[in-house]
Amino acid sequence: MPPVPNPANLYSETTADKLSPAVAGALPRVYVPNRQSNDVYVIDPATFAVVDRFRVGINPQHVVPSWDLQTLWVTNNAEGRTDGTLTPIDPKTGKRGKDIVVDDPYNMYFTPDGRSAIVVAEARRRLDFRDPQTMKLQGSLAVPDCRGINHADFSIDGRYAIFTCEFKGMLAKIDLVDRKVLGYLKLSKGGMPQDIRASPDGKLFYVADMHADGVHVIDGDKFAEVEFIQTGPGTHGLYPSRDGTKLYVANRGSHKVYGPPRGKGSVSVIDFATRKVVATWPIPGGGSPDMGNVSVDGKLLWLSGRFDDVVYAIDTTTGEVKSIKVGKEPHGLTVWPQPGRYSLGHTGNMR
Image (cartoon, rainbow, N blue to C red; front, side, top):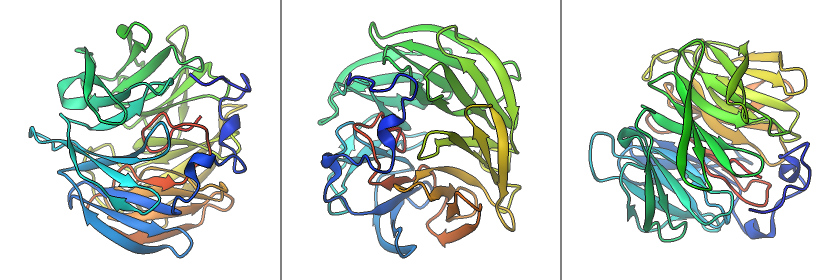
């Protein structure tokens, strides 16, 4: 994998001034996959207007930047069916390419060395390692005790990853060198773990828990729970601030997988240094903030409003919210381009 320039801050290469030459010419856009309407809405972040819309496969879940930053992949997992696909988007034109048939692609990550895409086959309890360009299958790893395997983050040295098991209230630790399951960790509150992100020094992992309404803090090497931070109802998505000092926590406002609109949605801000909540921004009138990412300059946090069919653009200084109408049930949107040398996947886990 590429070297870690600053072992005290694995986000050091994702600051606003570090756009890679690889993203030169990429259109500034927000790509929004809508799970129920089976399409992607494209937003111009300069005008907050929807400028394009196109159909993709069945049940698009996330828009995932490739390791080499050249392609955005829409993961269409076709829930309960066998015709899942990946839809490539060219970020320089904003246009989609030809679908690739892939089994159950709920989410997707990339090995830190860039040699493999990791398709998270949630319904199969399996990780499929694929060629990151062609998506040809290289091999599979069964994770049988991880029911609802879906989100992950990686150790600072790239040797292991920790995946969340949404429907088992636990985590799975995966050896990426030998490609084997190292073990499972049952969370103390036995909830519904969602997103997971590493601390700047890589020693801790923050795990959003939709039922426990907060964030578990895990020592990655010891694979042990350190503490729990209460945030808000339906804790779901996790996004580091552009300067790597804060963690934005999307609280979806409901404990249900398919919740009601105008819930008690909010965003909590955790200070990485103190592990304390330093701000909470409610969604005016209620809402359902879910997945997304931060703008290049760090001034806006973009999140899908999962049960409200909108996208939120949230001012990271004031918490002021702007809403944009999109398709039915928006999920893992991505903001592009993003600073960083390479992408580990999801909606832009950059390093």
